[in-house]
Length: 167
Image (cartoon, rainbow, N blue to C red; front, side, top):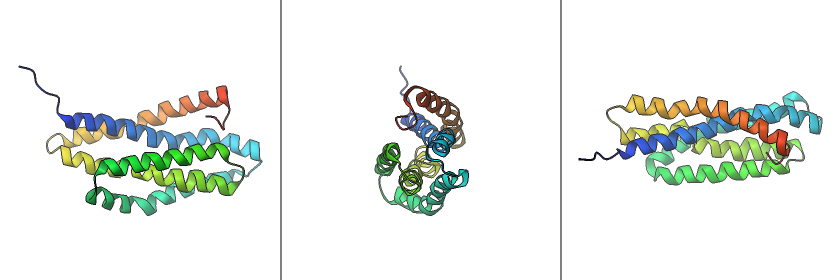
C-alpha cells in the first residue's frame, strides 16, 4: 500500500524557498551597496538608508500582514507580496537618484518582502501542523540561511556578468 505524502510538507518546501528568496534579497543589498556608492558617488550612509527604510516597512506592515493572513486566503497574500517585491526590484534597474532608490527598494520591494516573510509562513504552517510543527517551522526557516548564502553568491556573479542594473 502506497502512503501519500502529507501536503503540509509541500507547504514547508514552498515556505523554505520563499524564505530563502526574501532573506536572500535583503542580504543581496550588500552586494549592490558598493556599486551604488561608486556609480552615483553617493555617501555610504545615504545608500544604507534604503535598507533602513526596507526594515521600517517590515516594522510597519508585518502586523497588518499578520491580520491579512488571518482574514484572507494566505496564498493571495503571498502572491501580492511576490508581485509587489518583483515590481520594486525591477524598478531598481532604473534608479537615477536617492529618492528612486528609497522608493523602489526601500518602500516597494521592502513592503513586498513583508508579505512573504516568516510571519506569513508561521501562520500558514500552524494551520497544517499540530504534531511536528517545530520541525516544519525549523525546516522552513532554514531557507533564510540558505537564501542568504546562495543568493548573495548568485547576485555577485550576475553583477560580474551583466552589470549591477541588469542583475
